[in-house]
Amino acid sequence: MNGNLKMTFVVLIGITLLVSCSSGRNKKGPGTPVRVVDTNLTDESKLLDDQSKAEKLALAGEQLVTPVAFMYADSVFDQALSIDSENFRANFYKRFLAPFMSLKGYMARFKPLIVQKGEEAKKRYEERIKNMPNSGLKTFLLDGPEDITNEKTAQIFLDGLVKAKSEFRAFLEKNKDRELTLNINSVELMNKAMNKAEEDCRVEQISEGVFEYSEECSMAEVLQVKVERADFELLKHITAGHEIYATLLTAYDVTGVIKKDEIVGKDATQEQVVEYFRSIEDFGKIRENHGLKNIQAMGSDAVVGLKWAYELRQKLCPKGREDKLNRPGHLFKNGLCVPEYSKDGEPIEQVLAFFERVMNAETVEMVIPKNKSKTNDEVRTQVAYLSPLVNPVVDLKTIMPINFNECGNAMDVGEPTMGGYFPLGDATHVLTATGSLNRSCR
Image (cartoon, rainbow, N blue to C red; front, side):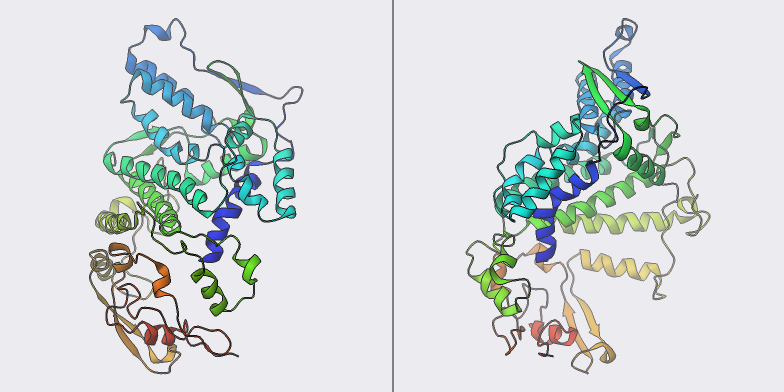
């Protein structure tokens, strides 16, 4: 977990830098083919009714939905919605782009945190910014104060991303029975187009409401695709997965994570790490508006969605899971294929019934077979998987290990139920059987 958190708070900015930066290949040169998107209404367009005007603008904005021009597209969708607030295409893209728009200025905002990692990290950061071609994207990513100075402010920043993901998921749920035609082909072709755009696409705003972009940005050659119930369901659950991950990263205060290696060393024992975090007052305290309880609702929704897809498997996956063209002409052309049996040979109805019980916060049996137990005996217990989410621990330090062996490996946990996860109070015994506790010094 510590590694994941550090990756989120330190490398997060590096990921976008690596993705967004190129060596300058997308600079405009002599003879570079360009296209123009003019969102200003012509005399002819002004004669249209409001719904038609808004749709015309939304279609123009759709051409700008690329990795280097999405912020321009967002402004065009704003124009469309100012004319017709109900335009479905503009509303869809506004919510789809909202998580990306929440990243505005974060290359500048995360600078103080990156500098804390030392001169080498600072040098890499400055070089990446220097090597980014001047563009609207560069301006967008640097348009912010240098205000993220620690884990707390980083988590506040991520709260905006969680909120945007949540609102997009809610939009998809509300509109899952509607239909929309998008000007992209499939997820795979869209990814290929995006990858090419990341390398060669150049977009500039040349005047108010007028955007010029190179041929490499064009999506004109790809086909229109339909977005229907199955596509909305998949998009919703993909978004929920992102939201759950971000929620888990922001639920508890992580003060001290950034400097852990610097202070206790990368090869620190479990005892040293626990002692370090125990010394930080705010570490592990649950944050206000943590959102953990929302995960239960997302999980339950996923079970309902899988049941729906399984019941309609003949329609959503008529050619079987091996066929890559179950739904030609749709966003997710491979289909929504729920197998009849799990990899272990268990009927999928039983698997879904199990997860339904889990999402209802019921206690279920957990068995560690003798041949997989580190204690060489079969271990049976009860697990309440959702307890840490429904009734979260107020301070994670209360469940941290207390006793350690001579080489610093944890021997127990601070609270026998681990926050209700093991309701029988046998957390130490079970975690010893899994090998998480009482590891030998060899």
